[in-house]
Length: 391
Image 1 (cartoon, one colour):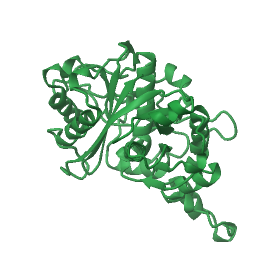
Image 2 (image 1 turned 90 degrees about the horizontal axis):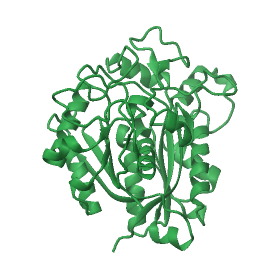
Image 3 (image 1 turned 90 degrees about the vertical axis):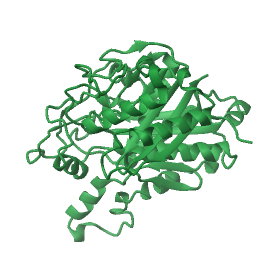
Image 4 (image 1 turned 60 degrees about the vertical axis):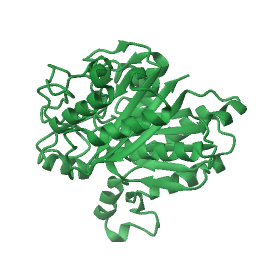
């Protein structure tokens, strides 16, 4: 017998700032956060833009550390949820580690590094959940998920499984990525970026993706536990699914097989038929291969009714958040369910005949969906989907 799983708290950070309120003017207002990058020199790159947050104090051009931002988001999530026993809460985070810490370590003269055992360790993915657990007095396990753009979605799914199976009453899940030079250079060298500084998911003239700052923490809990202690469940995490198609190292299966399978598994776990879904927060990277494959996957799941389901890519405003994408987009999907407002796909220009969807073009829409899907995919053919239900 499994337990119902709910979300009782969250903290979020994007290029628009901390908390849900900045999302209203940014993500839900359809206002992209892309601007020329000032954290590092982009003169040698094809692209110049990303969605980065400008800090109000200190050096506005500094690259923040993942631990600092995640701590703030985690504290916000825990305060909102008010969990009774933090020491019993596992920590599950999607991250590849903090590349800025690696760069700082190797650019510092050896004599100046000191004897700090954590010097450079923040570049290791496992360091973030370990340090976070220590700082906040949280429990075990403390696990990092590193499978790129589905990492934090997988962290949420693993947390939901622990809660549903009764192995934990509450879990802190999330993901973190902050734009830095290392991965910017890799994506730029692969000609993956939209060099004009705008991404146009699902549009005929889309030309690539752009990166963005993103960190999100969520408290996932059993509904019984939340009700027993008088906490307010924000949404029900009704279903989840994962799949791997292993079609190509970096390109998704054009037939959308893995994405469709992940969605079908999530719907089956939720006990929900596709026609009941009122909104899909798509992976929507703005690349030719991803968007057409994702549109095909949605058609496989929703059939002839696919064109009637509101679908948006919030990466059109936040940028691609890599390991943090699933967690941030889960929070955005949750806000959409609770407010009845579906965020738009910003920058949409003209329909692509290979993407026969309702892309919620450029302006948010009041639809009051009761059930929504948040979908993510990643290099290597891994896919993950969540089904959320408004309470």
